[in-house]
Image (cartoon, rainbow, N blue to C red; front, side, top):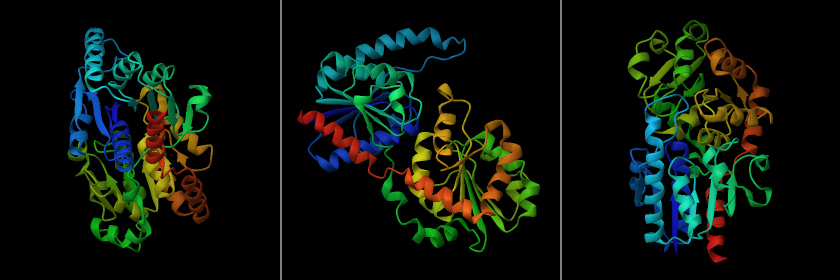
Length: 365
């Protein structure tokens, strides 16, 4: 049994792909899995670390602004198509899985050309261009949101959710004291957890820096602020970071403990972050990044807001409104309970197994 999994570029693509591979291996330990990614991208490091082989394609995205890099795009695309055909012909997979990202286009296109069935995994509520194109020939399309028949053939859709590290987010109630001790937080104070991914999010950091006076006046509240490695030097000495009720870190290596301490969570609206928040079941305030294709993070956030499962603050309003919004949630136990219950209803803890099952069923057929 041979399976190709292709895509990547960001953690939102790479980590679900690895979770799917892990689920397949648990079900069928003899399965041989090969990843195909983009050279120089995150997957070329994370996939081998997870124990899987990977082949790299010379591919990158098309820039929406005028740039010299776009002159290379057709050459890279042709080269990647040729290279993907070589990989597929040599490996001879029984099925190919695309998780989105630059490499999945040439790889699944090559698989389809050889008559190999394909499965797509779409993380967002608004699909990317690559998956829209590949959907025409896909056998199954695994999605994380309702209403995706607007973009894909209804008969191909499987509402599976986004695969995340479920084991990391289990029994969080029992980890609260451990988390408070780990981060040096006060057990008598309510905690806001702010995070913007491993690199950080400028808007969230600027909102924190602008909230000095508000946080001074609300000493019964503390903030665990993950500013990101990229922004740590810029923000570690700002006035907010020096407050006694603020703990600033470049990176959080124990997300389970960070979530366990939180009474309210603030983050971007990437698909992977939202899936984690649903599993965690804590009140969430989402600040969608405006710097993404098709503004898909806003659509992700609205999918939760419309179900009363999260609050949203627009990126442009974050400096003025974000900290106040978090404080309002902390002052309202009824709102906290409602947000927690509604977001937990959207959790899909068995997503990786369900997608793995669809892949294996295709091979049986």
